[in-house]
Image (tube, rainbow, N blue to C red; front, side, top):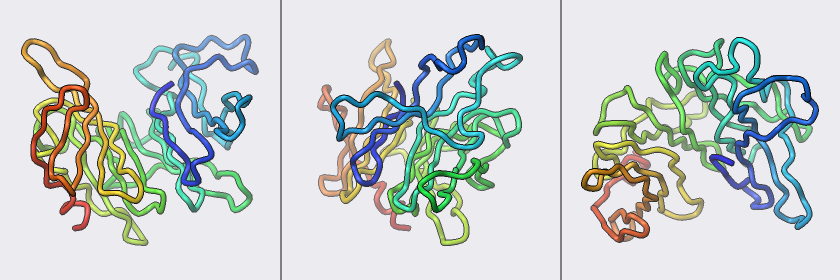
Length: 235
C-alpha cells in the first residue's frame, strides 16, 4: 500500500496498491499499482478497486516493465467529489503528471484529465496533494530549482486556473529529497517525508512543520529547524 489519504468526511481510506486483479487472471503485469478505497466504518470491509473510465490502466505488454508507466498513485478526493492522482502515461505531458477525474454529479467520476501547465510540464511532476476544498495543492518537483534534490512546492486555485507553483523555501526543503506533503485540515500543520542525510547514511524521516511553534521536528530523532512556509501558503 502506498500514498494513503482520507476522504473529507473521514469515512473512507484511499490508497495505491499493487494487488492482484482477479478479473485479469491471464494478464501478465509487473507491479501494477492501482487506486483503491476502504470503508472505515465497516470492520469487515475489504479494499475495493476505484472504478472510473480510463482510471486504472494495466501495466502489461510493452509497458509491463517500462519505468513507472501505468502505475496510478496518491489518490486525493476533494469535498466536491473530484479525484486527483498522479501517474506516468505515454500520452501524458512529461515523465510523471498530475491528473484530475472530475465528479460526474452522480456519485462517480469522469475520465481523467491531464492538468495543464503550470502544474504539469515535460519533466517529472508528482507527489500531489490537494486540500479538501480543492483550492490548495502541494506537489514535488525535482527540476524547477530550489534547495537541492526534490523540493516541495505550493499552488493555489484562482477559480479558473492554478497559480505558478512556489517553492516552500529552504527552511522546509533541504539538500536531500522532500515529498508526500499534506496540510492537516483545520490546522497550520504540514506533514511530509524527507530523505535527511545523517553521517554516511540517507534516512527517510517524517517531518512536521507548524506555524504556531515555527519549527520542524524529525519524528523520533527530535531534531528541529525553523520554518517559514505559511507565508507562502497565504501569498
